[in-house]
Image (cartoon, rainbow, N blue to C red; front, side):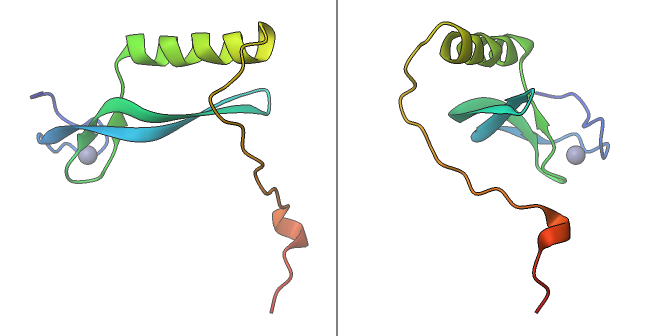
Length: 86
Ligand SMILES: [Zn+2]
């Protein structure tokens, strides 16, 4: 891809696969191996609109249509103001 990074202006990007965290109304879906173009300089990630659409559809299937996800995680949650300062 030869388009400029809109974040840093660098022209070099590589195709890679990353872990994407989709969030909607405090509900999360983590998707592994999502294809994207990543800027080789600043690491900014660019996704195909189609890919993002598919992730959103999968989110809908899991949260609203009862699809069983491949795996479900328990994720720790903390409030910054409650951090215990050493
Ligand atoms: Zn960049």
